[in-house]
Length: 200
Image (tube, one colour):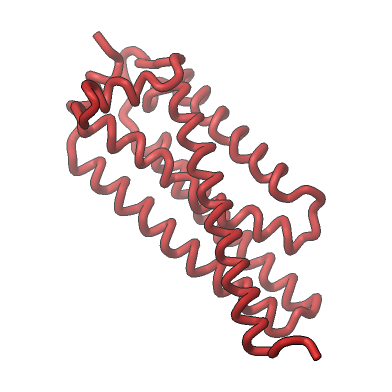
């Protein structure tokens, strides 16, 4: 029997709660990063950079606290640890026969992607303000390390389901977050150019 069959019996209330928390994190992070980037651009002085960095660090701390609750603390201890180290096994189970055959597993895939959107927005912004070398690569490596650490912890503590697909989905979510951050910078660049006018 597929290890994902057990997840289909999870209470829908738990899934809805997790989805609500994650969507709130995504929305608040996007607004926060936009506000910080706009704040820095209006007067790009060192004090403002330090204040912006402090705000982003605080937001990252809140995210990590919520992340810990979502991935470990809110999970029930299982008598044995279901796991899957076969890549895309959850996709084959969720979309069996070319349709959504198992809704709960499909939701878990979506949740794991959405979960890493906030750091995909926060980390590049923070690293860029700190003048880090190769901020995109550094952030991606940090996100992959956090995801791998989470899966190993779930495996050892028997909380949640350790699987290779979670690692893939988390990295995909982080990359989407990075793409959204790049789009945000593009929008701000155009707004700034319109406000200041074309160069003489």
